[in-house]
Image (cartoon, rainbow, N blue to C red; front, side, top):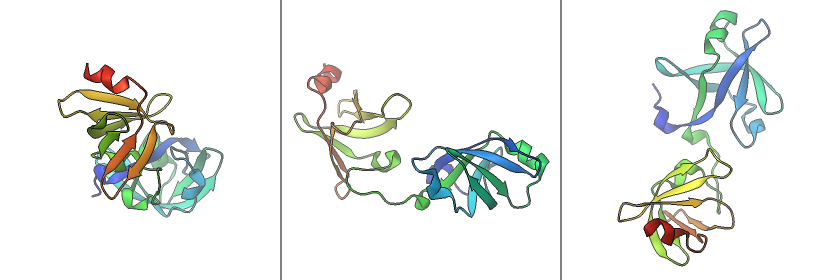
Length: 175
């Protein structure tokens, strides 16, 4: 059975649609059309991630209507609210300063002024902009907003993020 740690969150099943076992799926991705030709998906049910084969996809604005192979109206109703996942290998590779949050966890973070400030432990993505959570060698947490103006370079080869934190921000956390 697939492991959730080796997958990325694709979206969730919001509700049933019609009377033929179709489901409205909300996709939590930048470009939903990229997933218009999926053949299968992992659905998180009580027993874990279970593969379902997709019979049909009808794309809409930010969601889609899916029909799974062999799933009737009753089973479709039981899937409402379930989260959908795909293996990390299904993500298209990014280059330059574009990256997936899971990809940079564990990278060393280097500030233009302060030098090496620690290891990226998490990216919080539930506010107006993502926040980098960096563990300083002395154990303190430094939090830096992830906006284009602060991100200088993503060095995948050396597992480093180079940033330009706002003046005084790092000192605030280390004081």
